[in-house]
Length: 184
Image (cartoon, rainbow, N blue to C red; front, side, top):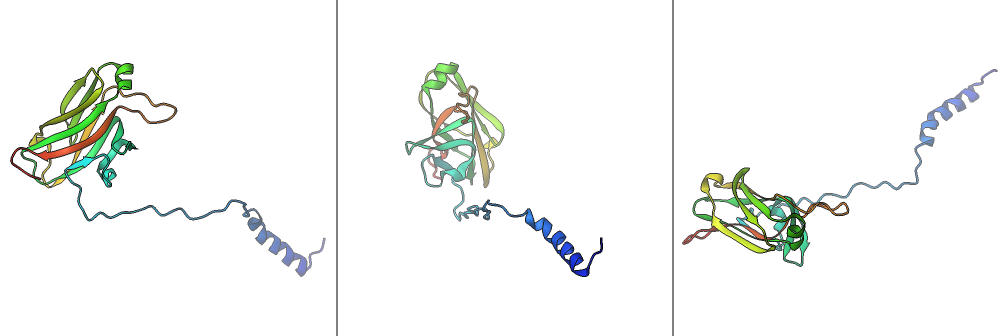
């Protein structure tokens, strides 16, 4: 078989275009959506209501979407963050509910609160209901002029249902308030 320059040129062109033949696709490729990067000039505060517009800024993990425009489910452990200037003479305040379903399935439960990774207190609940804790917060577990992490964990949450998250307790608000005679 004799090759002519024209045949050789066609063969080279076909070989060069061959990889491009497999690159056609019916799939429409578009660039990913930009992630919203929101700069908040306002620093975090010392307290958060679950329904305030910027509440998610305070959430680190374990807190689900807003329900009834008032409360949010927390899983096995809810972790929040707060900015504290002074750490003396503060009360830790949290309003939450232990749902009937949790008590019916698991019996009495225990909620344990930690500040910056150090256990503060545990509270036991044998009945469903709405509860509020307002107790002096130990300054030794808090960091002045810094972000502070608060963890509230339940020992026996409801297991995930149909691929959903665990559900442990319901949060309404949490954070630090000034003790008597002091304002934040």
